[in-house]
Every structure is written in structure tokens, then in C-alpha cells.
Amino acid sequence: QVQLVEAGGGSVQPGGSLRLSCAASGYIISNRCTAWFRQAPGKEREVVAGVYLIDQVGSRTKYADSVKGRFTISQDKAKNTLYLEMNSLKPEDTAMYYCAARKFAGYCVFVESEFNYWGQGTPVTVSS
Image 1 (spheres, rainbow, N blue to C red):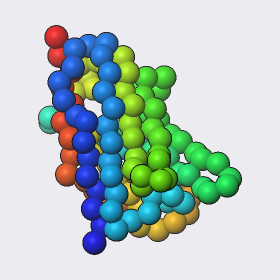
Image 2 (cartoon, one colour; image 1 turned 60 degrees about the horizontal axis):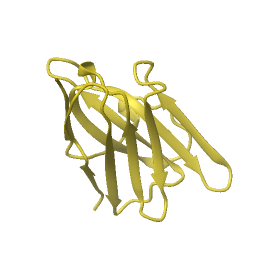
Image 3 (cartoon, rainbow, N blue to C red; image 1 turned 30 degrees about the horizontal axis):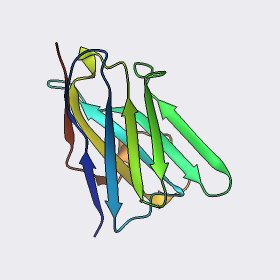
């Protein structure tokens, strides 16, 4: 059974930082697309960042324009964990953040329909 467990959300002032983690069990994150999505109240879920890490080849990442230069997605193969480092947080980053994983190996374009497994979400609130 695949489980994705997020942690690290919380409340922070504008300009602050948070680091989200997503520990995977029953699933190997390498050589598969994984991503962070978020959903703000009253809005649709959107992709924040995605990564496709290929062993001994390299990785491909994608970021939403709104977070480029502020957020960094990464994987720790040894811990089988996905991370999202969020810096210079803004009130508009307030949302529930979800990690997602694709069942099948191979190329993806990081759209929601490609992902088969989802975490329960961790809330992020940016407010002064």
C-alpha cells in the first residue's frame, strides 16, 4: 500500500520560510515523477513544483511561475522523501499543500491527471 505523508506546514509571516517533506512508503520515488500541488480556499488545485529524477542521468524540474526563484523541490533517495523548500513566502502562498506521485516510471508533464498517489495535505498560512 502506497502512503505519502506530508509534514512541515504551519504559519509564518510574509518573507519567512518553511520546508515541507513528504515521506513515501510502499513506493520508490526515484525514476518517477513526483510533485507538490496546492489548493487555496475557493480555488482549483495547481501544481507548484515537480521533479523527475533519473538515476545516473540527472533530473528535470518544473516550477509554477509564481514560485520560481523562491521554492526548490528536491528528493532524498536514501530517505525516499520529497521536499519543498519555500522561501520569501507571500500571503498568496497560503494554501493546503499536497505531495503527489506518479505510479508509472517515465516522462511526465506534471499535470494533475498524471498522478496516482496523493498525501493528506499540510496547511501553509502566510500572514502578518
